[in-house]
Length: 430
Image 1 (cartoon, one colour):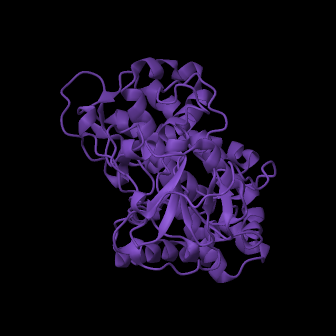
Image 2 (spheres, one colour; image 1 turned 30 degrees about the horizontal axis):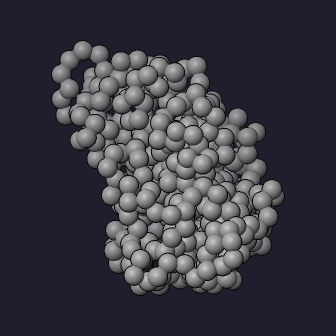
Image 3 (cartoon, helix red, strand yellow; image 1 turned 45 degrees about the vertical axis):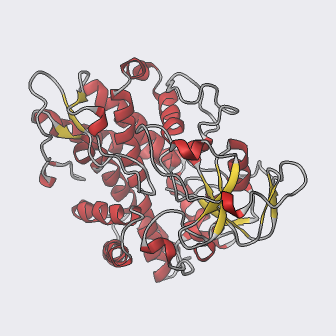
């Protein structure tokens, strides 16, 4: 989830010498998206300065931040807004050139304080460490069920559909009180929303699907679910409840699913680091989050007033893309940043963002990654790729980076094409 708890440790930050206007217009160029390897940020983006001009598809002249200190400072600065109608999109087709409308009531990631704070207070308890601790038996159960289903057959399988997608989806459904029979529709709709090249009509249909699911739950909410609790509070209107549920469903499983699959991919290609996982599960999760940083295009802020950052003036109304993948490879913050080292302390990484919008579900995501990756390699110690690493398709044009498929196999036998795991064979909420 891309929203987060308030930070009280970072005041507004102005860095650098006296303001200048920034590079000349002819230095503007679009956001670089081409990756040379599946685990490293785009090389062109990494060659940029810590803060540089960016040409947006709709003609807007904004910025992109790639340095760790600059990115962290902007994330913590209340003079930058996440309001949807103020943002410009750096990548995409039709969606990137159409003006955005203000967020509907309840779409709290695109609200600024104090409106944003009201929703955060309502939700924080449900995603805090204590509630996540209560969910650990469910996470372990769904993980074991998915691995049992894999083990009951023979490889190869697609680890995305067999494991990485269903486990987080089932957990968020349990947390919200959503029946598991709508899991497939939610996953498909979320994928459309995440694809920045999706047509507006496709996005509208995806939003309609998720909204209908939430309304069905709100019509008869099961006791104990987050949506039932939110409805019982009496603090939200029906429209706010519906949109809140849509946001949580849409953002509550895809990032973790992507990290599970991409993290497994990274460990499968680095046996030495994989061997260290059992002794360093917590450090490994933090390092994978830093090293992979899957929120690649969609973390944006627009200046509400002129703000001096790193010797440049970001003028009111200008949008900044915050490149978390590149910021988390800043050698000034993380020594030898291009090396995956699951024993290092990656504390302070920005994979969950920073400031008042840093990830609401970070404790849940960490638990799912730790439990999921540890159990996966314990259950299948000889797990391996079923295709060359170069043939694994990646989501280069998605707001949330990852892999479309991850064919894996184990044991003896040929590495055939990955079989599909039927939906009925996936774990349920029973």
